[in-house]
Length: 400
Ligand code: PLP
Image 1 (cartoon, rainbow, N blue to C red):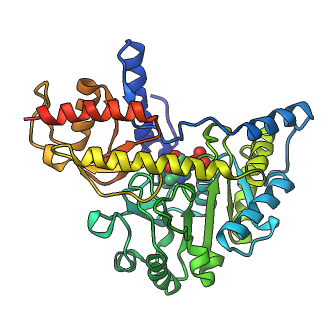
Image 2: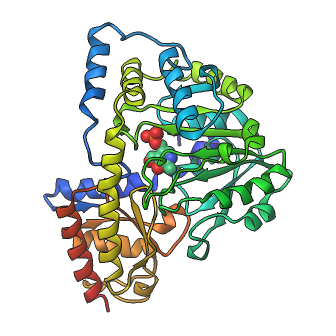
Image 3: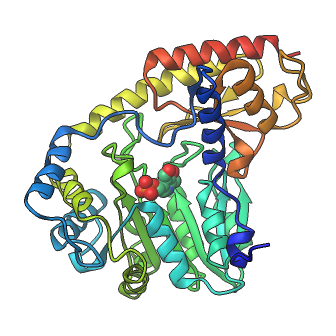
């Protein structure tokens, strides 16, 4: 048998991609499926951003860029961090990567040694523990249930930190729960972190702009400036500007860390796509009205979805205040039988039965480290969302 790298061999393929593969297989067999498992906005990239990319192509910006990113884009990134997050950042304190995912990969690959621990509050984005695994680290998963609004508490963090702790990963607004950390909650975590100088923090702010109910966004480096030398603040254009396919993410953090990540990137991609970088530059420096428009659309959908889901027998969900996911508890369905008679023992059983019997695709919460839940992405038009909810409701009504 072929021999694989030991870290890769024991990493799991992305659970969300697995569900998407099931959807693709059903669709290939002409089954009409409504997919509520997408991790991306359903809008097109704004026109002025697309135009900037076409201009970049036509103006010959089709060559390698600096490994760390175009200077103009890094200046725009630094300006974004100053303007929106109050961080004191120069362009040289930034790094551009091929997606936020690569920022995370670079950071962990650049710093983890065998046995290093990474604290990951659950429910988590599926890629965190797998990237930790690929980089030879050890994930310390801390379950954060509805009692704390799916958020890590200072007491939990304090109890989990050891001399081997290298990183804490924070994600607000959260994929998959939609939970948002308030300023006071970040402050409480910061107190614990100040007492543990060996711990670095990855602040994954990718859903920053998908924030509802008039809330103000807070990021850890702004809340506690004394931690700034230990925080990698990560963001990207994927979710804010409907640019998932362009693959641009960026970060700011301590120079030593950015330098290490750049060194790695120099042997890996040589830097992000030049055309996408020009598009991201237009996104960050051009008109910003797309952000508030898409936030409004998602907020309305959130209201509708939470209402409809909570009306269904067997499902209940607390109102998420960010991102575009509802995280519904399906505990009341467990131990029962699906309309076609399948015994529902786990949240994955529920998700599979929903797909095969109701033609609605969702991802089971245990894929994100916390069951029994269903992650329901509402990055889809209202009519499709209503249709999906009607099908889920019929399913729930006939579960016995
Ligand atoms: N972080 C979280 C929590 C995400 O959900 C995603 C995408 O799904 C990413 C990071 C990475 O996004 P990208 O690589 O497109 O920038």
